[in-house]
Length: 105
Image (cartoon, rainbow, N blue to C red; front, top):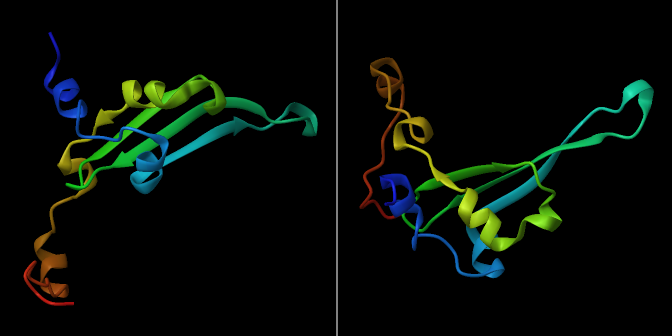
């Protein structure tokens, strides 16, 4: 049985590399080399923001060239809105002008 996060992640993302490139990011991280030597691979991190502004994040110990599109899709986890879009504090709310969603920009 799928968890709620897995259910949300299914079918709300991308079907090909072109769609991933629209809302996704993929990068490798490296550790510094010893005594000025070559850096060593650490991990591949990836993220995706869908059309509904849901944010997904993933991490793999595989190189991005070995990860593939399905590996990225399988590794993504939905981040809760509270972690991505924090609530405005009363102090900050007093200092900002919030534009209504219906405003023409």
